[in-house]
View 1 (cartoon, one colour):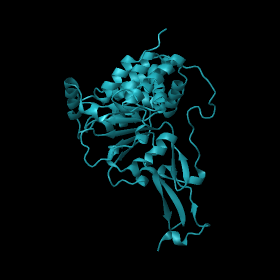
View 2 (cartoon, helix red, strand yellow):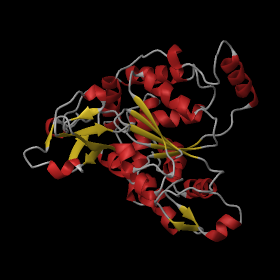
View 3 (cartoon, one colour):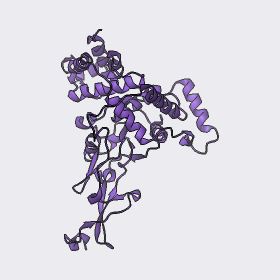
View 4 (tube, rainbow, N blue to C red):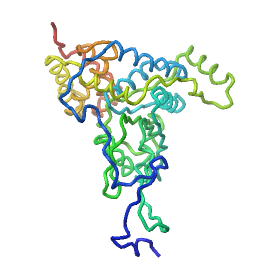
Length: 364
């Protein structure tokens, strides 16, 4: 007998349960505080030096276990401080999971991992409602998406229906389960990975979801010296083939990360810098060899990432060089080349580099 058959409206109550157990009551759920949500017009003095020192300290802690990959770590921090998500592309075994664990450890945040497979269901990501026959009440069990740093491993191995389960949480920072919306705890960042080599049995990400990622980061093989150091670190006094993140100190908390995000939002952007970013993005729509250019979200993301990069470099204003520096990871997943260009061996980064070079930058 289906338990719902005997569930009258009076009996269909949702019981308040312990959140630590992964089960929540939708009737008692409150929205999480967002960055500058209560006082959006409130301004504060930015202590750039202190923020930069904190960011550098976080980066140094990550490098205690992650050898090399300086650009990857920097770009992930840019996304974290800009409250954006990252799509990491690289072959297996380069330390993507280790990066997520190390990053979460630096600010005492929660981290979760979802291994995407063809049989993964949307409820396996977001959570689902269950009926307790003993108490005759419905309960909602939180999915692994309720965390601070989420690793969506090999996201392109799950069908579109499951991939779409991340769309709402990535854009709206909330999850809807059985008609009830639950706000995510901040900070919240999705680091999704995909293998660029093995494409058999995969489901390409739809453009709507790819566009939700602030950056697309290429994770390459370590250098010869870095690989020797990595092998020495892993095989020295280790019982397994992974590094222990317990050596990483928690030098910040979640409130510190939110304060950094608030400071990044206050970084000044001159109107000419905005026009420069927009000109780069609009050039992708008319450039020869590009089948599909970047949309307005590309312009917005370019400024967001540039502000975060400026803050990391101890500046409270954006320069054209900041925009140039972040243009490739911000735009490489937002454009599609024509078949002719791909056959001729052109890459997205090649074309974007030409656009950046030929787009006039503002001068003082």
